[in-house]
Length: 580
Image 1 (cartoon, rainbow, N blue to C red):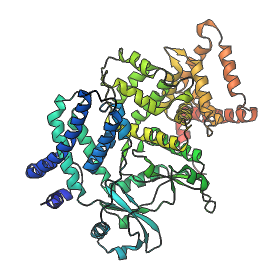
Image 2 (cartoon, rainbow, N blue to C red):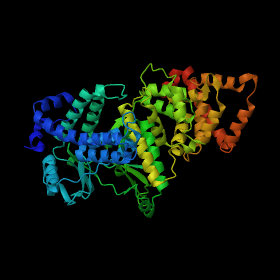
Image 3 (cartoon, one colour):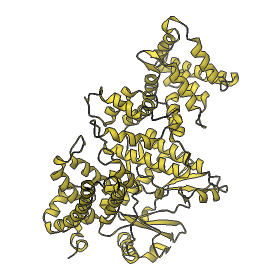
Image 4 (cartoon, one colour):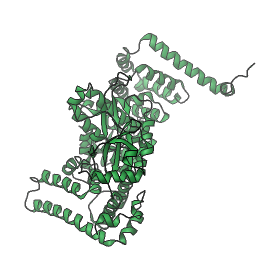
């Protein structure tokens, strides 16, 4: 009896979340399935390892390097959905995989031959408990897209809406659980003997992977993710998120709004549809930064198949939009991590390698208590020329490639959450470069970070601004100049509101410390720092028109007066006057 018929039993089919103990008990009682799959997987991987050894023995390693990397990608594709996902996960782990193999693994796309339409339609009917004709007015005879975990049909509801119907591959849970059981078993047996710098048990990495994989195949979870993502961008006119049709959705079938958009890989097609490629790239990068540094809830798989450009619609007065689809792979970033990411970007671009090493400890790339003294010069040696002659020469993929050189020499590890973030950023940058080869992610990213620091919307960001501007008690005038100059390259950065926020902060009780430090900075080294002030004025004078400046100053004064009144007469401010 084949695998599909044997393990497709309710006990596994009904498994809603990853549970390694339940999976282990199930397959320990069905050892013949484990042996059959282990032989298939083992023989396939063994032949690949022998090929690598052959190259090493006969001096062909350099000559066949790219060939072997390509073979590995094909092997993982042939082994099925679990191993495709393993390859995708490994493509973001420079601490585990050699660079030449990383370059090939990032090419993995979820492209597989579709499964039979009759089987797909049977799954839809079983899941929704109604016939295809009752559910849809019409449906495409063949899938419009096929991936490792499912395939998509285009359909029309009887109410007239055009929808995408996503159907999960049959018998997927038993296949994934068997492979996960084998991988975890191998990790437990072989992990102690592998020269891997993980910082923790290899089985934990497998379990993290299993948890995310089960989240991805739960279409109800994906629908909730989509609605949460849409809520986060509810005030944005630049982001499009498809609506979920819950009446036609189950754990294995997802029905969502059809997106009338265009893949970002077709630059000429975008231009033909009056979509400015540079504009759509800008939207993609800024919304990606918002996800990571403001909302914390981020799309971890922004590959070309999951992002579409939606042309402007003059009839509805809708601007050009970036449409996100496929919300199976999402993750949450905590507030401290969001703030530390801002720190890390600033410290990297300002070449503060000691502070950058501390950021790595905070983010979990280095264990608490790690001696950073030998790591700081290594960071400087590897990342010192990362920006070339200017900040605009910065390239994030170059950073990850260079950083991978440190992984085997120092106790770095990549936390699972940040593996997803690295995957997200590198994928977005690569996609942007495919649309515009001259695109520089830092042209968007650093102005965004500088703007957030200068505006200081939260006490934490204001404290971070202070840490950037002061070092060892001394005010770094050049940092402030550089940050303002770079922030102004963001076309949406308005200096006056930022200046108003700054004045409000300076006049507040919280700003007392900064007022004191700024006064000391002006007379540092027993001299008035008029030259620095003059440089700042030259930088700002075009934006600081007298009428607007007086208005901002008055608003700041009004804010300060209200705050003082609240402190002096809290009862009067908080309680409205009684009506007469």
